[in-house]
Amino acid sequence: MSSWNASESREGARFSKLAFFLMAVPLIGPVWMGGGLYASPKPDSEAAEEVQQGRWIDAPGAVLSERQRIEPVNRALEERLTELLPRLMGEVGLDMWLVINREYAEDPVYLTLVPEPVFAARRTTMLVFHDPGDDEEVERLTVSRYPLGGLYEAVWQGGDLDEQWERLAEVIEERDPQRIGINVSRHWPVADGLTASLQDRLEESLGPELSKRLVSAEELAVRWLETRSPLEQESYPHIVALARGVIAEAFSNRVITPGATTADDVAWFIRQRFADLNLEAWFMPDVDIQRRGTDCEKDSPFCGETEVVIQPGDLLHTDVGVCYLRLCTDTQEMGYVLRHGEEKVPAELQRAMQEGNRWQDLLTGQFQEGRTGNEIVAAALAEADHAGIVVSIYSHPIGFFGHAPGPTIGMWDNQGPTPVRGDWKLYADTAYAIEGNNKVRLSEWDDQWVQIKLEQSALFDGHKVYYLAGRQTRWHLIR
Image 1 (cartoon, helix red, strand yellow):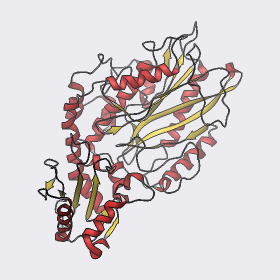
Image 2 (spheres, helix red, strand yellow):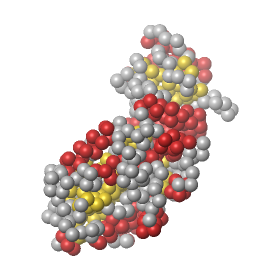
Image 3 (tube, rainbow, N blue to C red):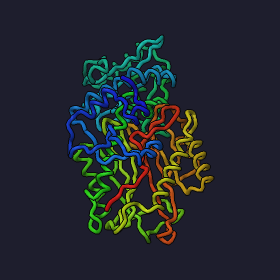
Image 4 (tube, helix red, strand yellow):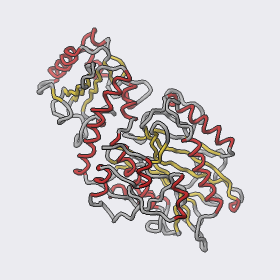
């Protein structure tokens, strides 16, 4: 199966079997209204948006049932285990990786390594990955009371806990690895899943000589979590389109009645809509309002009110995140409530949106493999300052987690270097939330500052950044 190609996705020339499967299933919820994975033909007036990867999505697309999700998730996992993991173990110089955890205290990496429908560790669960070298296949073993299916070979038939630890030690001794990676890390929570008591028990079981070979698997854990496989790159655009489609529903007259609906009403509509679609929200959706008289200064971190009734002339903003097929999104978009007699967004606001797209371009133009997050954000901020854009950039990786590991590219409360995480280098086949905001003055609001907060999910293929489901280049309009 071929990997996702951005030009093919934009042109609709052809799609993978996985993409077709995602679209061919029955819908959960209302009938899809176009603009999901298959973009409907657009009029000439919108052609310029396509050049900028702009894309209009007006409703969410198809959602698989829980049972239907198992096959594509496990197929992607098998691809990752057979093709990605051996390469990464070789790159970081580990010939064995141990992932050991217990029920109620799962390692953050564990659920990315096991097939559906597994969703917890059982008792004490041990995964062993061994690279024997000489171009032999990486062994995938489980020393656990319960089997994990065909992706792992069970090397223990069950017994008491002492026997389990003895068997793990035997498995390791038989293979004689020189560098044994364990998930301990000071700086990366996702790579710090081995509890102190389990580490003590591991060292006790291995003895002093083998314990000397234990090293942090921090680099492997981060690289495993941040890298998107070809099959994941095929399904990710549809997943992001689901989130954008729900925003489009929320920022419309299907949901909002000016003068009656509150910002909190819209936030809870989004939360409930995700639940109705059987999609997991990884944080409570946020909706805020800016209007004439709103407290917003040039140096304000964030502008907007939440405890208000929506009125004509208001600027709406939302921040949502959803996870589906084990991949997460993070999206922020803007809407405008037309005043009586208005047919389109005021020109000043459209220019503000264009300026928002401009800082996005300045940022993604700095993405080069091998550069650190700190280097990228510093260069982008310098270009934005030269262009006269008042901007704050706080972009981050996405993937198995909404705030995933990888290079931090600015933080909302720190526009300078970020220690450790900002020093992580940019790799190919990684995904990001291109997140930040720009501020402009509105003359018709007596030169009051307003904030345009944008965030769209994108993929870096090693050469260029592609928005997975397009990006917002025009306002959602509510009448």
